[in-house]
Amino acid sequence: MNDNAPSNFGMDAAEEHRLLQRARRGDRASYLVLVQNHLRPVYRLAFALTRDVTRARELTRETFVRARQGVRYMPEAASIYPWLARITRNLALSNVAAPDLEYLTLALPAVENDQLDVDVAMRYLTAVASLEPDDQLALALRVVERLPYSDIEAVLQTAPGSILTRLSNARAALTAALPPVSGEHAA
Image (cartoon, rainbow, N blue to C red; front, side):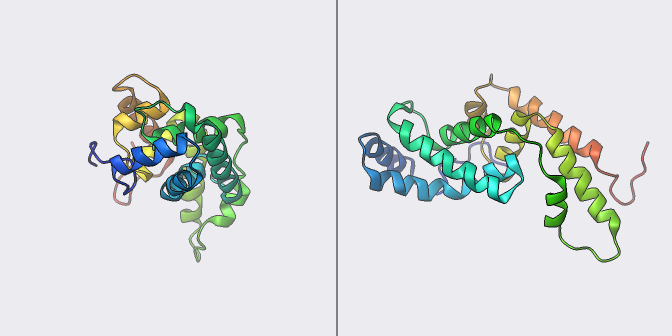
């Protein structure tokens, strides 16, 4: 993955900055363009944090409501996505509830006569749910959104380099929860 990849999701950085300036002054149309550009990434992040479609939709909506209320206070030089991701994270943490694993089971694809695949998926979901919220967030931002480490550090407000450790620990926990790949033997 390229750590220098842009995190403005297809929008030119200068255009994003211009729209942010207008949104800070109360221009609703400019804010709505920013929402449209960042709606899917924020929803994907919300889903990664909640693993529930309804809760992810509610969290996404609340993120943009809060962002609209606070856009004029957003740091001047900040990029919008790390700021939105931080809002999403904080809202998710304030509404923490254990994931409904029974619901998640229903969301898994049907597998004919292969309970092993369902068991593996459930172990994976349980392992993700057992990670610290910031580890879940770091993993989602890197793997799903493909954000550069520097943007993940900005979202989590952590020291440079700490994201690599956080991601390594999260990946190790997930690997430990899964059975060996076919052909490998457990030690």
